[in-house]
Length: 121
Image (cartoon, helix red, strand yellow):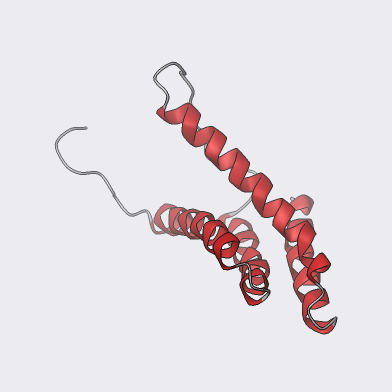
C-alpha cells in the first residue's frame, strides 16, 4: 500500500522539480522509469494471456483500492505532460496509451459495466 504512495510522490516531486528548475529533464527520469517498468509488466502479461502455449489465471488485485490505483495512474499523467512539454512527443504518446488503457480498465471495473457481446458466454 505504501509503495503506491511512493509512486505518486515520485511523479509529483519529479514534476515539481522539472517545473521549478526551469526544465531540468533529469527530474523526470524516476517517473519515466516507473512508467516503463509498468509498461513492461503490462506487455509481458498481455503476451502470456494471448499466447496459446500458456495457461494462466488472472486475479484482481484486492490489496489496494480502486481509488489508490486511480491516483497512481492519474499522477503518472503529471510526468507524461512534462515529457510532452520537454519535446519527447512520441515517448509521451506511447506512454499515454498505456495510461489511458489502464484508466479505462479501472473505470469499467468500478462502474461494473458489462462489456460482453451477448450469447457466446
